[in-house]
Image: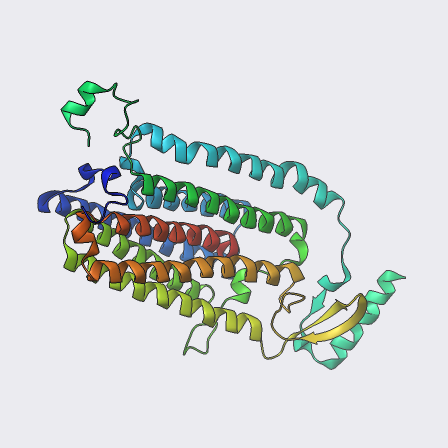
Length: 149
Length: 241
């Protein structure tokens, strides 16, 4: 055996014939259409929200849950994790989920609340569009200086 | 390896030759690498969310920043990034079809699907370069902003486009996060394309047939799907929300 670097470890149960391949291909294409529909829906909603305006909290809930749904499709079907044995699934998903929950908790609840309550507004954050003309843009800094005084 | 003779001589899980997770060494460690990489991207995105929450008032609205589309002189919010997402999902599907063809040891189909994946990857990287170009160049009119450059406050400066120090769209951190997150992801796509090309050449030369299996295609497929997975999250948190 000339090439034996990873040969003894490979599971040949993954290999299959033509009939099984046809079934799998059909399943994969179905997942693709689901994901495409979700993406189109997300873009439509994003466009609608940009033009009409939708409450931010609804957008966040819808977008994040749809993203997690898409991530589930990719990991379960494309990355084949759904067809691995149960310990393998837990080894991949478990530690990552624990860490991510901790990170989200830290960013939104503890540190995020503190940072928002104690922030100092930096001076480079206010800006005006020059569309209104020179007089408008010349007035703006005076107003700001007045605010400082 | 797991023939009956050896399992009779040794206790099943201690004698070696048995994989309790029923997954090969290479695939397992590709998964471990992907988890560590996913943690890096999670750190990026949660830092982004943290800063965005902190500077909620002056953070730019992404659909007002990313509204360019090639050859169209009209504002199409998020259309181009939608196209990029479609390209990446499509290339992910071609990759998984290459893996499926590898399970059937169909060399010709593996080559076809991998070729399409490489094309999709290059399209995505090119699109991202185009998007960076427009982000850096900015609008023609520009915006007036107060800047701090080398510790000196300069009021009411006309700013075009973006760099790591400041940008015309809003808070200066927005530009920095854009460059780092999409840049880091784009670098992953680029290296994924290079690995895909390597495996394509290996398949073309018939190395996989000599080994008797197409596991390398499966491993690079895992990496490629991961890149797609990250983009799904970047797309949501950076462009949609």
